[in-house]
Image 1 (cartoon, rainbow, N blue to C red):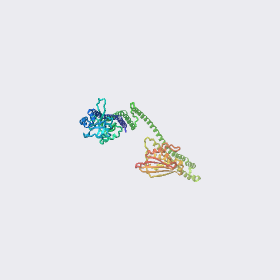
Image 2 (cartoon, rainbow, N blue to C red; image 1 turned 120 degrees about the vertical axis):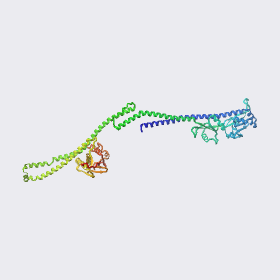
Image 3 (cartoon, rainbow, N blue to C red; image 1 turned 90 degrees about the vertical axis):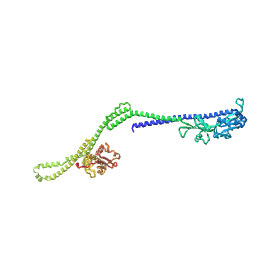
Image 4 (cartoon, rainbow, N blue to C red; image 1 turned 90 degrees about the horizontal axis):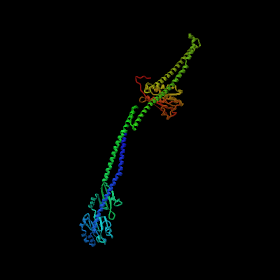
Length: 640
């Protein structure tokens, strides 16, 4: 993922996280203020409804007061004539005042003198009886008690909720100095749907009033009001069907301060709707501002950071691909990117200098390693050359020409007549056997000298080839020749045979598969085998095991490959050293230098093969295996 993509993702995540957190905080704090404001407005509307109902009750109370002060009602109570009741309180007069209940009580006797009730459902007159008013008798407890208790408020009746009011009736007018209460006038109005609709119109609040125990009241209202502990405390509930309206439930008390009435009002929610719109606008505005800020910041980061870093990255990749350490950015900026570019240029310059120094050091180290390898391999061959030269010198010093010279000195006085000397001189009889013996000895000495000189010549030639093979180490490849692998193994055995003092006691076992002549780098091949065989000879000599045995195997492998194994029963290799035997400079010998096996492994790799080692542990011998790819001879090649 590119740096630009990471920055875009990070900035987007920050903007969205901030917008989400801001929206949550606004919903908790800002939107709740809208809800609280709306609930406050709803409660004010409910107070307006309550004030409207109280106003209706107050108007009813004034009507009751006017009727109770009239002379007609006073005479009616004094006369106690029921027949005059209809004329004193005619139905049309009550209808004009929207009175559904009228009741005249005698204060002295504590009984109802006259009463009339109009059924709001059928608009018919009903007989006023005890029990018409729900609950305890209103007449006994409130109207005709002595002294009578004035009432004003709401009341639940068998025909529904009613507004009621009472006023005392006196025996004289207010102008009389003394007067006595002779009765009480009670009037009432049913809260019919028409009257409630009028209140709805006046208050602009959609509400309904029900008796608390009315089975026709909404079940939801009964459920909500059942949890209300205190009356006259409205409960506000969001509408389950739509979030755009709010339901208010209010348990109202009657004239006896009992919660007998229920009011349900429905309110629209314009304030919370505006709050929701404001929250959505704030969210969109926050996201838009965040995106705008992100685009501006991204554009600034693109111009000031990403593009310069992109150029720096392309420059670094170009240098890495071309390895051209002469290229420079040469930035003149004064900010951190400019400092980074200049430091990068300085670093590349130092890398170029370090690389040049490293190349020189590596070249010197390589030349030193090559020289060490050459010296090691030449030293291996020089051991054999030195032994052959010493044998040749010893043979030359003790050769038979001295005896032949003595014979010639004996014959010189008789050189004129050798036949007479041979016949007559006793020494002449031994001349032929002596000459024959001398000739045989000279022939033997010549054969030994020729053999040692051939070994000496082969060793010198191998040294020459070793030196020549290293002269072109910088890129030249060794020359492949068509050779017999078995003959080259014998040559390596011969080279190493003179290097060990216990050579006569070491058994060299050969297990060779049949091979035709193949193409290999002969001198590298012999160089590897000389190292392996000489190490094996030294291992068995050092161990003192009996019998001392070195086994050389030549195996043919599939896919034109050969495997040469040199196994011994010598000192073996410890497991912890087995993986390091080919490391440059590693050795376990007191006088070793750790170059032979390292150089042999490198030579095997240069020939396209590999060199491996195996040992079961110290004192259990070791086996070194060389695997090589082969090239079979063609008709125009000469086998050596």
